[in-house]
Amino acid sequence: MIKILTYVFFTCLAIVGLVFASLNPNPVEVNYIFAVLTMPLSVLLVVTLGLGMLLGLITSMALYIRLKREIYQLKGHIKIAQKEVENLRTLPLNETH
Image (cartoon, rainbow, N blue to C red):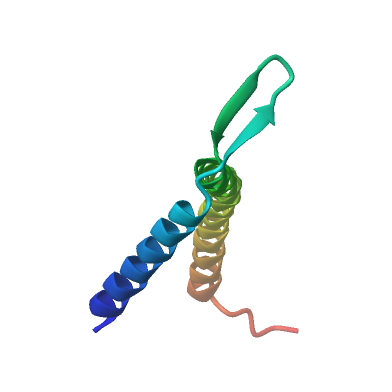
């Protein structure tokens, strides 16, 4: 069921994109520091969206890597704590006060 909804969602998204592209065929100029580029508005927006998604992916991957490293370190701390608890359990009790 989820696959069907995903397929329908992306199909509707593609249709909206095609309608948007057909309604905005006018060329626009993009002035860079060293060059000027002319392209349709819809292409410019798709390129901008793609660059934004790429930047977001890079940013989230940096966070993901940092969190994975923290998880690895915490697992190491857990192993050390478990060994300490096991050593404390095996020590004989000293009943004298």
